[in-house]
Length: 494
Image (cartoon, rainbow, N blue to C red):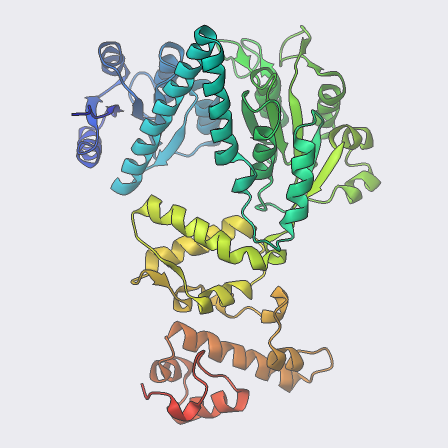
């Protein structure tokens, strides 16, 4: 019988430990400790794959304890559970303890189990990677073949196959250009609105490059103060950042011989632009608080959430830095320009969500997909994922219908997506009267309300404050009818 993966649960509150153990003990061998001292003793005596640790504890905090664990058992996956969300704590946890995931209180048992399973899988993958690397060192050609197989697996898992698109997608030209550029060791600038998948494209290019067996790192520069950004990127000497007791290795050193993707470069301050220019042109830098010049052999990829042309014209972004970062420039279209990709995108996202939430789903109905296609998705892929998550949670049937869609999406103007409704498009034309435009909006509200009510006209009339006869009169006036119903006389009475 295969042994269960071993987890270490650390929390000074007895009821929290009991709750975690109850949620996880069916699938894992659970060790518990009320504090860092007992937890360290258990680590020395057991083979632990992952740790769930509370942040706020008497004595050592969760971050302090996990930092020590990282030094002695770096392969153990570290997860922190906290009811606090201070930025300083989060940054410290990421930098000092190498946190894999944050879980906030109150957590859901399914969320805890999913995090534990992912952590155990990550631990096993890391062990497999280390084993393959060791075999390569001692077994010559055989190990090289295994490494190449791993590279193929990584390319398939993180490569251009992850950039989901239809056969006629506007993304196709961008992907083909990215494929050509990927194997050339030159900087790349990827532009596109937030949520268009710049990080996925950068990762795909890395795993299609000659550096695919090296590390890929990503840093979102937007919103980070210069001091934090410099420490993350350049590293910091002991005592240079908040009295830190040890040196910190920056991403430029970690990613040397690999790839570093810096997203949000359009938000960089003049000082950071100058530092990045030197890195891009010379490959040299000094850690924060240090005087020694270091060099890096990192392939830089940069992402910008906005068009840099206005910033270049006004001088807010350095032209020499722009040219240093943009040997090749890729532009990712927003989701509203990829409506034909919605089918494959929604099927993929729903598949992931169904596995994550353990709720079977067959997909969307054609009408639901049509309503989603009428919306312009200003939040791009994250907004689509949020909407599909909401629909999955509310669904009672395996195929998700339009009645689950948010009202503001149901009321969206079809002409925005490039699929204009002839009736509404005519009424909303620029030369239309106020009365015409109000009537067009009224027709849209009727359609949205009936869709939510699954075309139950009695319920729709009650919500809209109309009689059933009045509702039918308006439906006839605006030619609004239920999809699939062609003869109003054949409609069933509700």
